[in-house]
Structure formats: C-alpha cells, structure tokens
Image (cartoon, rainbow, N blue to C red; front, side, top):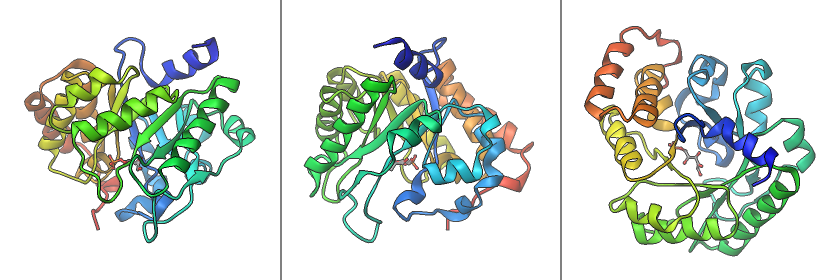
Length: 269
Ligand code: 5RP
C-alpha cells in the first residue's frame, strides 16, 4: 500500500486500536429516507463522535461543514431506487470530484448473486483502479440481493470476492459463524448495523463482531434512529475501541441518554 493510501486509511481505521466507528448516512441514495434523516443539519453533534462518515456528495456538500474535519467515505455509486432493481448501479462521481471533496475512501455496493452482479463487480474494479492511481482506499459494501440468505457462506463468499478484486476493506453484515467470514477475508471487515433493533441487542451484535475479528462498524440506523443517538454512538465506541462488554456499554448508554438533548432524536417512521 503506498503512502497516500495508508495515510487516508489511517484516518478511518484508527492506528491506536486498529478499529473504527463509521457512521453510515447514505441511505437516501436509493430513496430510503428514514424519519428525520432529511434534516441532516441537526446531525452535526452526532457526526463529531464518529471516526468517519459514509455518505453521498450531495449530503456532504449541503449538510456537513468542511471544518468538521472528519474523514469521508464517499458513496460514488447510484442507478436505481428501492422501487426498482437495486443491483443496477454504476459509478456516478468523477475522480475530479472525489479529489475535490478530499475523500479518505470511496465506496460502492457489490450485489453478488444479484441480477446486475457483473456490473456491480466492474464498478468495484473501477474504484479499485482509480484508488490505486490516486492513493484512495476502496470500501466494498456487500449488499444483499432480494433472494440471498445473510449467512456466513454467502457473506463470506461476497467478502472474499471483494478482497480478491482489490477492495482495501469490506463492509458486510453480522451473522452466525461470523469468524468464518473473517477467516477467509484477507482485508479488514466492518459490519453494517441493518434495521433498527433495541440498543442492547445492537451493542451485543457489535461486540460479537469485534470479538470474532471485525475491525469496526459502519452503522447507520441503529445509531441515528436510537432514542438517544449521541449516547448510542458513544456506547458503540466503547465496544469497538475498548472491548467494553455489551452490559457495560448499555449501562453507559443509559447514563448518557439522560444527558442528551432531544434535538437530534430521529423517528423510525
Ligand atoms: C446500504 C449501505 C448503508 O450505508 C448501510 O447498510 C446502512 O447502514 P445500516 O444498515 O447500519 O443502517 O451501505 O447499501
């Protein structure tokens, strides 16, 4: 890995712990705008607690201050909304704009087993090629096709394929036998949070993933849809960076949630 790529990656995966807490807020790119996520401007207090932000360039320019100084993992793929075939994506951001926005990594989804599997894998290849040319790490998101089972066999296969194609790091889902995915994937893995579940369960999931070898989380709804998002992200940080047990992290969440102003509480509607 050359200097520029290493330097960018170390802004995301923190060198002191080898782990990261990324906050995913790119859901709107395919038409999924959960609750008050449209009022992004309120989220800046939450952004401050993330190691990195994963989002689209529109939201970045409109809603994030350039002075916030958080590394950005830019989603550079789009193509179909949730009303159509999601796997039908292409790379939609030029390299000029990626550089202008000073991104620390670029990302797209791969739909292994999906209708447009090949196109999505070629999108990843394009990003890997650009990344090597300009020193930008590539995150491959192993999105799950409609009929795919989220098990270790499938997610392991998709994660391994992403690594073989040159992804610098991979985002996948937590599942039973998660360690089997880690075993066959030679690059760092972060987990998505998935649909909102109770806070304690989300902390258990994050902890299990970390203990089984994940390098962190790229969590969205389980943080920004929490009744207390700032308390939740701080609890997740403890689990990821300090190996805190889910019980202790949940205790911290309950303590901090009392102190949180309701200004960024986001409904799940
Ligand atoms: C969708 C994504 C999203 O960023 C990610 O899955 C959202 O995070 P969460 O599931 O934790 O809400 O990459 O393809």
